[in-house]
Image (cartoon, rainbow over all chains, first blue to last red; front, side):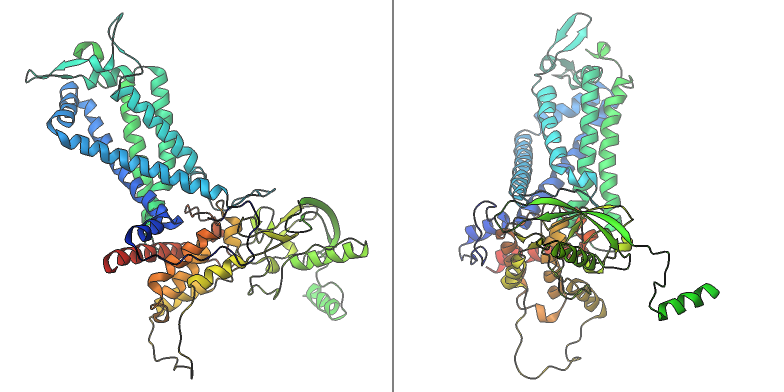
Length: 267
Length: 274
């Protein structure tokens, strides 16, 4: 990028010849606006896949404590080292996606130093123009979500009237006799708290807006969109975004509505 | 019938054949900037006696004649063919590149697209890579350098080859022609919230990617042109599609998908083949 400040050379910026060495060559390719965008699209699709699996797993809350607590135990204990491989991969996807998108955004901010006095748009959707904003909100929500349920830093669960236990100290005895972490009570305690419900619901709507543009845009970035399949890809993008929104809201409001048995019986 | 005949007679006699087309009065807000480095500002010019039949550039000529008569400096703006094929005219009109009509350059926009009494804001293209030279004229040589970086094909000199010697499928011809319609005006950059020139780059890459003549340089083309695009200081594409709506030649963003495909395949081929 040439800097916006300072005089421009009348013949433009100097040309850079491709280097013969592998690593600088590849990094130059991935550093370009198209290359970085490709990585943002791929990591974004990876994160969407994770979100879909996360949703399917969490829907087990409606099957009762044994199902979801058993599933959580399977993920954190039976998978062994694989869970850490998966977590590292997720962290990598998340970090790359956020870093590259924000870097592209900061570079592009210099591309129009003088704004227009009169603003108008014809075709650009609000979702497409607010990707950075919606992305940052979703990212902050993910941090809160981790603090809330994974690190148990936000609030304890009231197992009996007057007795509050931290989320991570909730225990559940499986039908097999093994004592496991009680994810079920934690979720029920969380989603019967009004401000938590409001925050999660709002974040899901923002995620929906982000995915509404993000999914179909990833296909375009990867060169997988064409005239014939463009409507199908738009529909797919909407279905993915809406499916994740509907599923997550179903958990949040389903628990609030008491579709899952209340906490006191299982604690 | 009688009215038509009367209109015809009037036209022959040189009078206005459409008596309903009264001259319009507009309030223009025009960006004035003396030099590349001078600070500019929006200046308001009330202008009347505008015919709805005038093109936007003719209306600016009209304004300039008024300014010259008053002893003021006329508004500088780029123009050449005035028939929508050269890509010289470049005006941001009421926040829209080339104004409110679809598929037209500023020169082909007519004043009938506006209503009597409207306020019209006229600004230059805004991008770091398109510095303002004066008033509404910008330096768009960044596009020339992007083309020079890879938007060309190598051909043998000598006699013209037989037109049918190289069969090209109709669908490829059509797609290449759609992309080749780009006149390089820069409306895509002006309209893009990121000031990205990706539609311009994509039009050339996709045009040459469809044709056998474009194949020898194809592997390096996408990388070289995208590299130059970035160095010129254009932003990145976020698939907002505002460029497609602004393009006077209505070039589709599907060519950007083609550019991305070429970028992916050339990168993969660079990794595999070395």
